[in-house]
Amino acid sequence: MFKVPTVAADRLPALLRRMPKAELHIHIEGSLEPELIFALAHRNGLSLPYADVAALKRAYAFSNLQSFLDIYYAGASVLITEQDFYDMARAYFVKAAQDRVLHAELFFDPQTHTARGVPMRTIVSGLHRACVDARAELGVSALLIMCFLRHLSEEAAFATLEEALPFRDQIVGIGLDSGELGNPPEKFAKVFARCRQLGFRLVAHAGEEGPPAYVWTALDELKVERIDHGVQSTHDAALMQRLARDRIALTVCPLSNLKLCVFPDLARHTLGQLLDAGIVATVNSDDPAYFGGYLNSNFTETFAALGLKAAQAYTLARNSFEASFIEPAAKQAYIRQLDECFETFR
Ligand code: HPA
Ligand code: ZN
Image 1 (tube, rainbow, N blue to C red):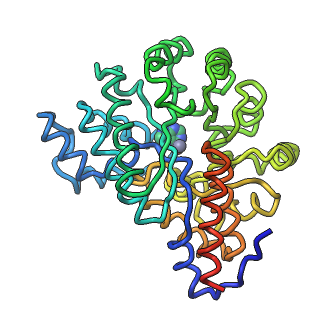
Image 2: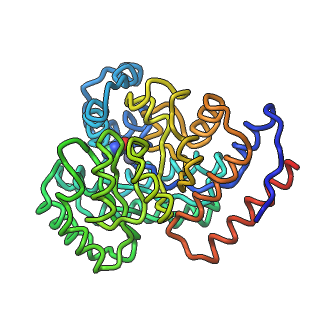
Image 3: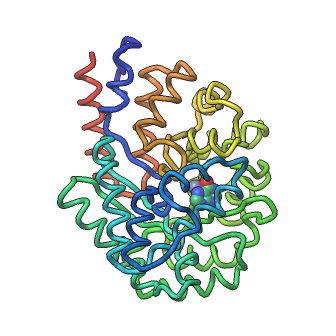
């Protein structure tokens, strides 16, 4: 096992920024910056219910998940053409490369676009082309995870799956997002079973605002491999043991949790507790354009608030590669790059 060097507190932010990492929980529509929302609205001849970028930014004051989702879906409504989806993802990849993200797994929400008449082909083609170019031009590998909106019906999810099947080889996995309370994972048991048969990798948001019971049913009824958020698991000791024992990764998003009032401040975040319990936690940005920071801000601000150290930085970065959906050989190559980076801080 790699021996992590002791790193002085004043050098820790540089290490966090420079270390290779993977991002496993990023809603690509949540990377739409206000400036790009206005530019795309203009390009597509759409008007927005906000006078300007500053007015839109003033609306980014959230009290819970739903208050955010209302604005997030409104922002996504400027996406019309294949080039719009490409430009959105490209802007994210440029930021990710600056944050030393070597691999990213992007969530997308097709139902919020197909409901407006945007074809599935337009969405997937634009995002896929951006993924191909990110690898070639920025050195970032990327995969797409299609999410079902849980406030809609399971029947609607089945219809979305049908629409996506022509693009099966451009989508690695299936996720579940949107308003959690009142929409438990088991609502989607049949469609997730079908996705499993089709060979998709499975993840679901659970235990962000919802109870530990939702994490249990995501595992036992949807049979997901990773839990997105999962921070409410700390309220259930048996669940904590299950997550650790089965090495179920949690894609934790600290600045999201702060902005959506899941924790009153970052110093009260339970990331350290999850790591101490031996859970495969990772750090992610969720919706960086809305929550005040991309991946490195999530790392530096959370480490400062919680007093985490180099050993935890190494564990989190290593977990991000190990929990990813890339080939084992590629994982090992990324982890070697991680070790080399830490060596330079010895
Ligand atoms: N939770 C649920 N749905 C979402 C989120 C989130 O944090 N971000 C975008 N869609
Ligand atoms: Zn999310």
